[in-house]
Image 1 (tube, helix red, strand yellow):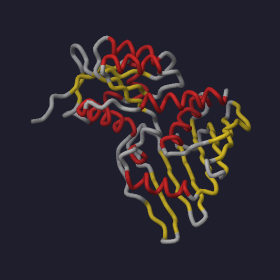
Image 2 (cartoon, rainbow, N blue to C red):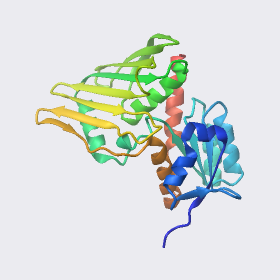
Image 3 (cartoon, rainbow, N blue to C red):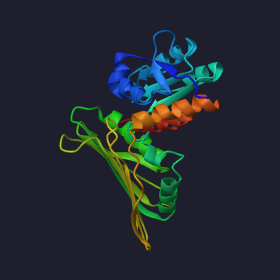
Length: 270
């Protein structure tokens, strides 16, 4: 028997940030626009999003999707979600890409093996001119953490309106560099390159506004390979994860991860 769709309410700001109407329309079995009390509320991730999301939970929402959250302490929201047994999913443009999801075993294996033998990590994130470099950094680090990068001693080398450069190291001592660049010549894209003693792994994460596929490429002594592509946007994948979370009764772990991200961004004082 097919479960009834969950009814969704979205603010205009959340719609602009997360293409909510288009995503809901693409998942008609799982979701439908709310005409009364909603099951799920979409919240825009600008300042005070944790308060708005907590308010939605206290008002009876079973699930909340936050589109493009800025750094904030999610502790009170996590408490509210636990108290009301609600699930909160963070829709992040690169970290939410299904190609690097926890359930994507083939990609996790490639990335884990490359990091175990890494000699250098170089990562670049691009955003449009005028965008806040701190917001770009948040999305960039979220993607790096989702890929399993553990960055020690991370520090800012330079930053300004046009971007930033960070340096740090992996647990094995290998150097890591992260560059943020605001430019109109490249779409909003993040790349993570892991160089190893015998090859490399490269992850390219596209803009979440459409279902352009991410690419995970690996080069080893056995040759080069491109992992099978997934034509699904980060936005759509976030909503799919929420439906799975509510169906299973297991809350998403997004807020736990965001706590680490929040601390990391704030310690850099960009």
